[in-house]
Length: 204
Image: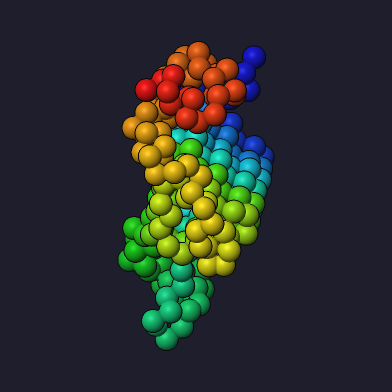
């Protein structure tokens, strides 16, 4: 019997989930915190991921201790501290600064389909990671990452393309991530055995 299901995410213990939605066959690793985010079909995060204000595509592979959409402090104001926007926690007669929280939620990180985000990587707010891209473990991504690019370092910089531009374009046109569950199962052996170009030649 398959462990993952279409109708409900598999959420491990000790997770905190706030105002978030999940597609089919999604798994959330132990101790992860997901807030104001969406995870597309088949995407998963490993243990202790921290994801906020993010739109994550299908088939995203998110390793342990990844942080996506880390929230900012107000650097242009007199203080960086919580007290002036989480004010109700400190003062009986004050309210939280909901405008600040709305601004944070509007600064979404966008993660494409079939992406791999390595252990301990960070992706800043308002950064887009293209389909098929790979983020190396420990990288801090401060700029958009093109489709099928591999990046690493602090700040993250391109290492090389995963596929050349022609193959990447063909893969995005094929858009296998939109296939039905049954079609994915039917093509399973080809996903396992065929190199990318041979896979494209068979299914285009």
